[in-house]
Image (cartoon, helix red, strand yellow):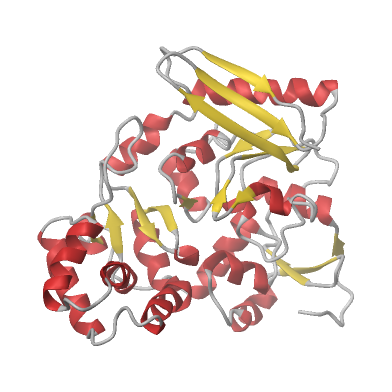
Length: 376
C-alpha cells in the first residue's frame, strides 16, 4: 500500500529488532511452552523436530519434554493451518485459526487438485461426510483413508482423495506423531474428536483479534505481510477498521506498516545474540517483505528444492546454515556461515550452539561443534 501521508520511517534494522523482540529472540523469554505457542500463533511443523528447536531458541529453561507433554495431554496439536502447511497450535488455535484460514490457502490447494482431474466424479460433500465418519471412528493414516475412499470412488486419484479429506476437514495428527524421542506415522482424526469439545465449537477466529495477535508476534507489518503469513487475501478492511487503535509507520520502500501502540520497538542498535532456528521457522515465512531478517542476496541460499535448511542469525539477520548429524555415539552440529565471522562473532556462535545442544542433545550422548568454511 503506497503512502501519501508522512508516517515515521522504520528502516530494516529497526524492523529487525522490533520483530525479534516479538518473536522472543532478543533474549530467552520466561514463558511456558503453551503460552509461547499461543503468543507466536503456532509453530511451523512440517517436520516433527522444528517446533522443539523453535522453542529452544526462544524460551528460558525450556526442555523438549515440556512440549511433548503438552501434545500428550492434547493441550497442543499438529494440524494444517497457515499457508496450508502443518503447524503446532494450542487446542483453541488449532480450531479457530484453521477456521480462519480455510477459505484461503487450504481451499486453494483443494481447487488445484480438483482442476487436475484427480477428483472427477467425486461428490466432495459426500467425501467429507464419509471421511469424517472414518477418522472419528478411529484415527486413520492417509493410506488407510485413501483405501477406504477408493471403495466409493475407484476411478479417482488416490492421493487426491486423501488431500481432499485433509482440506475439507480439520484433521489433527494424533500422537505419538510429533512426540520428543518417540515416533509414529501420521494418523488423523478431527479436532472435535481429539479435543473432545474442550477447544470450543468449530468456529473461525475473529479476524480483528487475529490481526492484533499477528502484529503482537510479527509486527510492525503491512497488510500484505499478514496475508503472506496466513495464506489469506483481502485483509485491508480489517486493518482499516483497526486503524484508529494502531500506530502507523512506513518502510523505506514506502509501504504502510501497522503496529500495536504498546508493543516493543527496541532501538536498532540493541544487541541481538546469535540464534539457531529450525527449518521452516515462521520468522522467515511470515512477511511479504523479508528484508527485515533476510538480505536479498541470501534469500535463495536457505532452500534446496522445496526443502528449507536450518539457519542461524547473527546480529539479528540471516547469516548462515547449520546441520545436525545425530548418531548413537555422538551429536555433531556443523555451522556454515555465509561469510567468515570475526573472532567475537565466532565465539558468540559457539556459545549459542553450546546452549542449544545442552537443551536438545541426548544427555547421555557427547556432542561437538564444527565450523565449516564459507562456500565461495
